[in-house]
Image 1 (cartoon, rainbow, N blue to C red):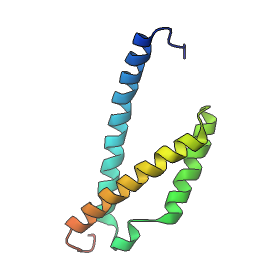
Image 2: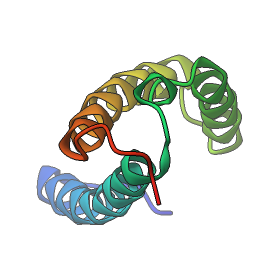
Image 3: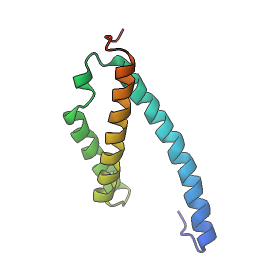
Image 4: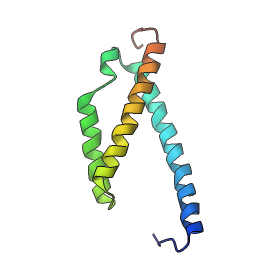
Length: 100
C-alpha cells in the first residue's frame, strides 16, 4: 500500500479505516451478545483460557502484518475487558435463565 504524502491523505485514510473497524467491531459485539445468550453460567462469561488464546492469535497476526504485537495486545486486552462487561450485562438481562 502506498504511503500517504499529505496530512489530508492521512486523515482520509484514517477515516476510511475507522469506518471499516467500526463495522467489524459491531459484528464482534453481536457475537458477544450471542455468547451472552448461550453460556449457561455467569461464571463462564470470563474465560481466561479463551483470553490467552485470543491474545496469542492477535500477537501472531500483528507480527504477520508488521504491527507492534505489544500495542495490539494492549488494545485487545482493553477491548476484551469491555466486551466481557457487556456480555455480563447481556447475561444478567436474561434473568439468570439457562440458555435454550
